[in-house]
Length: 322
Image (tube, rainbow, N blue to C red; front, side, top):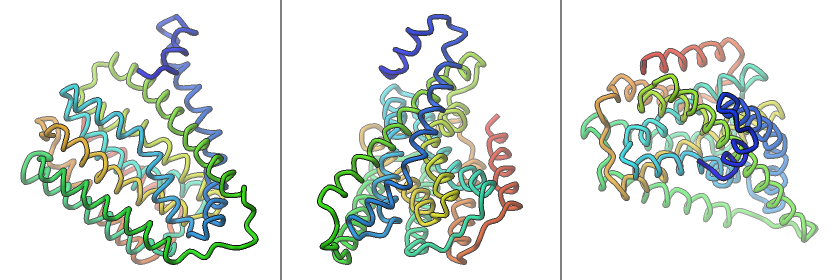
């Protein structure tokens, strides 16, 4: 439990109020952070003369993936490997269909951002490799984890090196604009992470009291909770008509989750699949990854009818876990 969660619980000593207090405060912080994350991303991209999609993949996706990393490491070190794997797979499923579905409810989602196709194919490679490891080898071995981690590091290096070779710094850029942009972006991401942490704490309290299994908690409550930074950031991006930032956040977050989080966690401790983690869950994850990649390659514009399909499929996926 985080320090902030403990402080809020101390301020609200009645057990029946702990979860609602955490949830409400967390949602408020998410709203504030989401309001500033997109303008800060665009501002930083202009200051560095780098495409906003690169900023969103590296900075926003990396920052908003911090909750998944902490949850997975804590769960794996505590022996709850099903939560560690379920958190990552569930978060990626939420990113691909729940996040996009909710975003499309507010505005059309144009999947035609520059560089999106290449990065979507890389995301698909990570997804298929992870899914096949879980299906064929019943978990993430040390070698599989090393491959995931090494591949993600190479991917990040490629993005940074490509951005640095193509950027053209403007001479008239104010010297403090980049500092202000970085500060604003880090503050917004911090609010998203803290808000998500509080929501997760409240959700886990309620789920544990309801007697849900570790696999279900990992794939649903924790996965959705740790995906809240991505949900808020993507919805805010779409509403502000910055689909490039939204796509970069989704792709980058999925790659970070699979490469950095599963890779790092699997190197520290083996990650067996467990008995509660069905093959149908993994197959659904791989199929959704293929569908999203195909939509991005076709540069599809997603409209509200698609939102109903995506959200409905997500909750059907969750129903498989119960």
